[in-house]
Image (cartoon, rainbow, N blue to C red; front, side, top):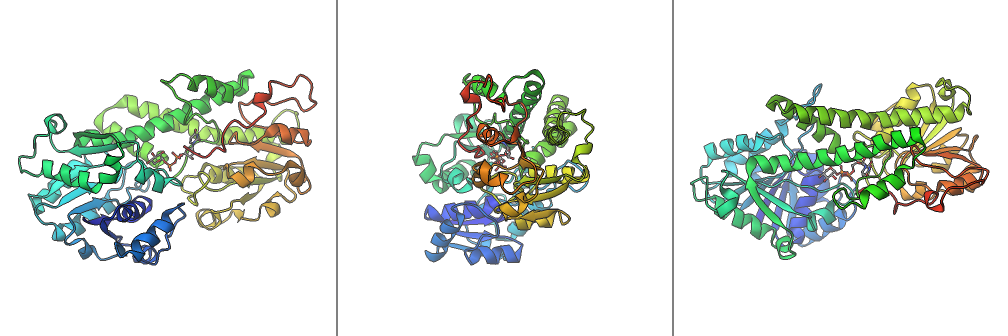
Length: 481
Ligand code: UDX
């Protein structure tokens, strides 16, 4: 099938490459000429494991191409809208400028019987507006809202093997009986066309749900909000564990054994970041406020507050360690050299958007520390985002002379750092594991003051050491879910 994919960021580029992999003839269209050219050259402008190989496969087979020319959409049977929907400058609401531009650029190419599929994350009500615009230009065009749930760093796998597919179609009766609520004879044909696009996934047995447009738009922001609230919940539990002497990992393990709760996304740490969760939470909150859904507004505000407080908690912990048990004033931070290990919002990605690691680094610097940030992939974007901050991919250089180390992103090479080797470089043996990913007992044995918020630590003198399970890293590497 001939397919156009409009917008070639994380979502669109991966989607286009995966569709070509399934045998479709795909053109990716991005108004950013340099991005389109990089993709056409088989060199994605961002780091996403597995994408480069898929791009090469599609380009070499002649099934995949990229351009900045919107006319390339002509003749495609299905058009996917995959443009970014960032946060509005100076506000929480979602900026729909790129989406409206993409729709406008598509109108001249639309022909009866073709299908437009929206995948971007949008405030509920947007799809209806897009449908009206499309229908005004071409009444017999099919339209489906089909949200995307891919995660950065596993985007290819998530696209090839999704957990579910949601089709939002016009009219509330759409899902129930397969009738054609638009009355234009296009809804059933549109569903059939999208089924053909996704034939490999459907043959794999991926559940496909048909619902109305509003629900399909909400599924995405509701899912991201739920995940954000889940992370903030366990981070709030880390605060209470710290204050009461409990262990947040044991707590998460025990909570997670309840199938209604589940263990995934209950890893306490520095909080959530990235290009999706924070902005989707704010965009959803802004839309909920407009709709008068105050419960959503309050809940999401609480989740955001907890998320941001994790950085302050780490700063206070580092200050306490530097002040060595004396009354904490925060002054210990001033002039201390702090190595922040990690800049990206999670391992396996070079994305520093809304990165908790970088926010922490900036906050430590603001509090008077001399900060150096190490990251294996994110040096360039981190320097661009924070021009004043010292960022390096030279881990040993970052460790040299440090008074405190803070693990802020659980890259495997940082998580598995050798405490003896690190001890030979630093000025003071202090480490904060802000991701709960390191084997801190080993660090303590090597003479380090090693701590993690809300986590019970073995006593440094070895006396009455707690159960060994608390000392071992329990997570397979804090690879984000
Ligand atoms: C997220 C959603 O998971 C995905 O479904 C949606 O399509 C886009 O947004 P992504 O932004 O790639 O994906 O990141 P994700 O792996 O979900 O992690 C989000 C953040 O939460 C990261 O900063 C991560 O470190 C943090 N996190 C995750 C935790 O702090 N604790 C956890 O237990 C899980």
